[in-house]
Length: 179
Image (cartoon, rainbow, N blue to C red; front, side):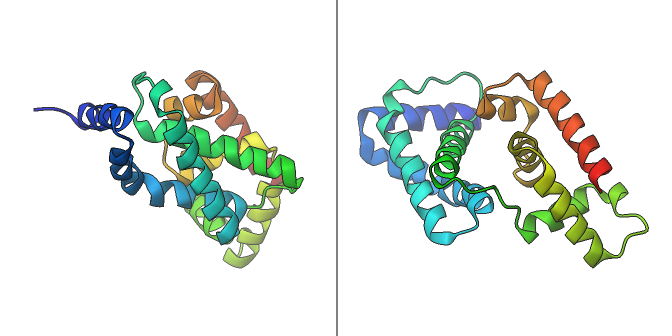
């Protein structure tokens, strides 16, 4: 019996030869990538444009894709991540954290919640997240909001999995101090 990665790789190989098959890949990942992008830009129209660009880039470079042990979604996240970074650079806006992410982070970091009113806590957490560097926020988002492994985060951000663990630890420690 073939595993999910083997099936996915066969689909990708078919799409390399016949781009119409890319529609199956698109259908499989579009919602996931959209959520990822939307949480970073907070605007529906911008998120839709960036997701379209992400899948256009993926299709355009599909022939150069090589399986290196990660799910295909990691490659898509990396493309989306780079597109979001380019968008922020070209629009010179600061990254915002939406309230949905704050809620999720509050659930994950329950030790940070003690003795603080829930409403005040969310506002404090939002302010603290805004104080973090972009890379620190991104690592926290990928780990806790997208539930991606350190290995995949490293692949997406172009750093080692060990470095992800160190940066995540430091970011959470900094976040705790800011709160």
